[in-house]
Image (cartoon, rainbow, N blue to C red; front, side):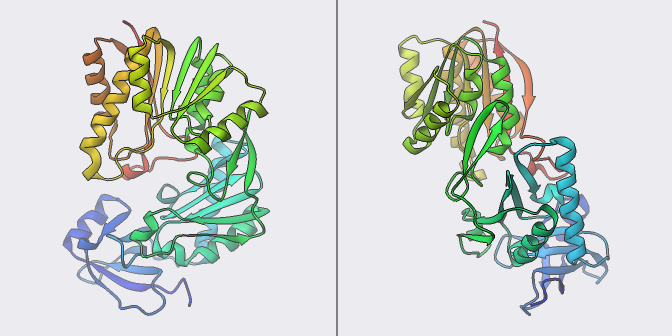
Amino acid sequence: MNPYAPALARLNPHGVARWRTGHPWIYRNGVAYVEEETGREALVRVEDPQGRFLGQALLSRESQISLRILTRDTAPVDRAFFRDRLNRALGFRERVLPGREALRLVFGESDGLPGLVVDRYGSHLVLQSLAWGMDALQPEIASLLVEIASPRSILARNDPSVRGLEGLERKVLDLHGETPETVSYHEGGITLTADLRTGQKTGAFLDQVENHLLAGRLARGRVLDVFTYTGGFALAAAGSAEEVVALDSSGPALARARRHAERNGIRNVRFEEANAFDFLKAEDRAGSAYDMVILDPPAFAKNKRELESALRGYKEINLRAMKLLRPGGVLISCSCSYHLSETRMDDVLARAAADTHRSLRVLERRGQAPDHPVRVGFPESFYLKCQVLETLT
């Protein structure tokens, strides 16, 4: 199969209207016609109902997202095209985060490479192909990454559930070299390990690195880190705090967090395995008080249908956290649910503050790290919200 030989897709008026907004996704209801399967359907030439050229896109036949726009130009989408896109993505990271050991090299649509994620951990790369068209091009992408980045290994972590929506198999496989089970890297002065084959995402939460470092600068006194996972926030805060309580419901995650603490000689972190909601209620009843509370829960709303119940969950944990804060204490509240907009998050925090009779002021509004850039006109790329608040009363 020639992965660069385009088939033809024709939009209906609804699809053309969406194309003109600049959003990089065209849903199935916007596509009037797609050339029958020919063995060359990774790429499509996109036309309007009158047959006029609009651009070129990746095709997904089973997903509700039928087309992912690559370019509005007529220039060939070939190996040189993807080499240029990859070089620009890697060059951007060298400008914004020079010398960073572990970071995201490619962030899908935000780098003009829809459905592709590439993370670097030292000399090892972990790749995810999350769309049918990009998965068909995966061997070419891996070959280009070997040429451009000279990694010791490339691992395909193609196990996210979203691949099922594309009709793709969920699997983990080596594409180049041999990838170790774990790789060490640094966040500031802390040494951490990423579990490349079985850890969350591609092995670690690289999108929170800058927020971890901020927590380390703001921490003091007694700190509670809820949903600590492998201890990113807790260990960063430990350098300035007197005591850190790090909470998670996952025993294996806490075991890794403990190993991280031991490796870094950190002795002022106490790890607790418990349900977050139950623990926060118990601490409230016990009259416990903290100078900082960090909330970094998993996505409560993975789709629109889950949003209303997610809002109740977000309000509950923030309300409990606010009740535990001393005056002048800091709340770092995060959400990785794209469907929870920053405006809705503001409303959740305001209602929680009103119910607890607390007054808070915003110190910072933050998002994901700069190696996970937000693309204008593509709100789906702005998924991580991080509010940093200070209690006044």
